[in-house]
Image 1 (cartoon, rainbow, N blue to C red):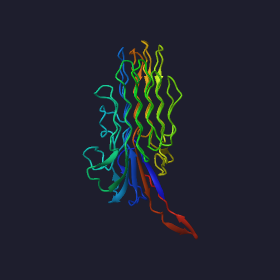
Image 2: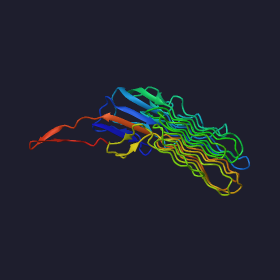
Image 3: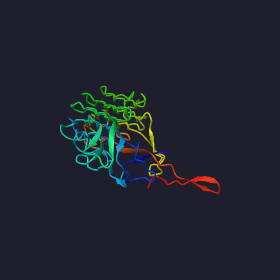
Image 4: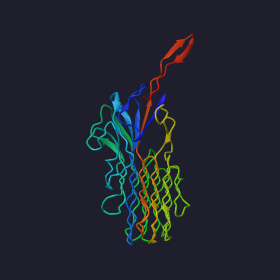
Length: 362
């Protein structure tokens, strides 16, 4: 029986070996955490910020060794470190919990758009996934590594929108870049990038005061579109739509969330564990919001990146400092373990074959 196990940020390291575990042929897949969007500013010179980058994807195939009774791992809720080029701190890890000095597998997080230079987007790691140190006790071969998409760029001008989040890399290809903004005062935001290669596309750029559409996911569809001051969410791994800009007093602006289930073939957990029956895939980036050029309090909310690995969209600049300003969050990372377990032994009871089966999750 082939068993699929999900490990998310809700589980605590270490992972305990299942009762029917077989080392040979097993694989480890996963994505890092998506990058957090940047922090915009207020006032006559208020500006949006760049979007968070999408996470990298990796797949590793068993080569040699034997799994111990437990295996350390790390999965982060969402990337939040203030450095556009720091994709290691919030990486997803297997066989280690140290992203820089350990010995294990590493799937990079998307960079968060938080630090200097001001208003810059998060960058995706150009490798996507690799191995750190000398993995032990099991040695793996890296069979696939895909990069996430960079966050969308904010044009440094007064009262501009926020960039879209990048889409996550996946089994079928790289994630796509979030959409950029423009120099229009009260301009729109950038759309979120699509995920998982294939026919996915980058998030749409803002066009004067209009927000960009979300990029399509792997299937060539799923990008959010059709909204105005509230962007529509993506689907099937597509990016969220950005909101338009506004000059209306008190007008709330909301970026659309990225779309989930971006793989051409999604994963389904059948382990009997905490995620049994759940289907998961990689996610699109969240849409940015436009700017509000009216000197009245209003709320702005960047679109969240989708599970798993999508980057968050940034909110736009605001003329007035009142109201709430919410960054688009990056999605959490994920580990997917796939193995073919032992066949339960048959016993004969009253002439009938019955099987003893021990639930693999414990």
